[in-house]
Length: 345
Ligand SMILES: Cc1cc2nc3c(=O)[nH]c(=O)nc-3n(C[C@H](O)[C@H](O)[C@H](O)COP(=O)(O)OP(=O)(O)OC[C@H]3O[C@@H](n4cnc5c(N)ncnc54)[C@H](O)[C@@H]3O)c2cc1C
Image (tube, helix red, strand yellow):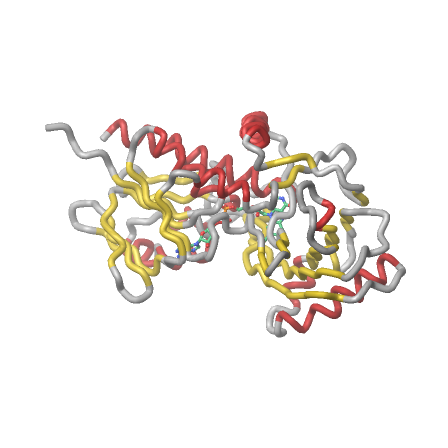
């Protein structure tokens, strides 16, 4: 009798998890994804409220990798991505920005089509069986199934927490979490206005200012019909200084900073909310652990245990506009690895 094909669990339906799961499923193998979020996509996110839709995570993407460019072309063919031709200020010369259409969440939605995804399910515990399989449980202790391999794509602090029993027992290599990377926090404000904000630019990178990016969300392609809307990102160092402040307290400060930068008063605000991303951007640090040889592999997998890690943080992006590329490359690297592993079983 033919051996049953291995079952994979993927924790996190962001770009990395979806990309790896796609490759696995395209080989006819069985995969189930779990995501604690209301929507799939993780930080490639869109917040909706009535007729408003704000890309409050990654606002746009760029590519330096040839394979990722091909993936972007496929998303463009599928109408999930377009060039953002707005007027840019302060961005690197020659940077070509693309954005999801009709919103950034369209990219993960396209990647996730046809995949088996359990949404609003937080994996709280991973248990190893003596025969080598894995049991997953949610926070209430409800069993989520038995799997032959488990891929974690959450930010490193969360992955480490889930794998702590394995780290304590010695079957997870502590070197996995010794990466020269720092996850930075970013506070975001989403605002809609009664009329147009008097800005000659649609996307501003404000280097060295507390407000790092100011983006006219409604200027992106296919954002027609709704009111003027903006998304403002604070610089990580400023965000991290105010982590213990209530997040809504920053809304007025952000709007004042935008008005100050534009040297104009803003139209009447119809809606404004803040969101704090504790693990927004993966940044490489210059200080790898000197006791270990820091690996720069974009994904990690142990064929003995069937455990793996993927996500943007495993090979941090060289610029803030390349996070989605890092996540996609990591997911693809892992997906190929898993397929080789499945064949060898
Ligand atoms: C404010 C902001 C601005 C950004 N700007 C850009 C930009 O301009 N360009 C760019 O390319 N990138 C940008 N990025 C970064 C980009 O969004 C990320 O690099 C990329 O989306 C990461 O994908 P990922 O799959 O590695 O991780 P994530 O998107 O974080 O996916 C991980 C998933 O795991 C889920 N999860 C975590 N723990 C559990 C659990 N225990 N159980 C179940 N599910 C769990 C989460 O809900 C999440 O969906 C930005 C991000 C933010 C927040």
